[in-house]
Length: 112
Image (cartoon, rainbow, N blue to C red; front, side, top):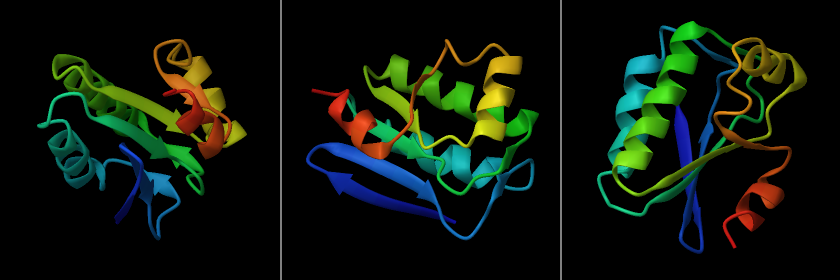
């Protein structure tokens, strides 16, 4: 369900084969991504390319990941958010909580 790649010392995690991040997927996604932050100073990008909908439990996972990242001196950023999903970030007033970038390239560059 998740595909991971590494660019220099930045992990990029992307959903594979799904276009909705909802309650049915939250537990494995939360567990897998939070585990990356077991190592301090991890830099991770969640690429939401292809995700058309995120429900409240999905946003809860994003917040959990952000908290885990901060507790372990890591960095968590999000990129490639479709307009309809970004509207939900804004509605929930989370657009200022997360570092959100239009493209993967801009997100990777933000770490420099």
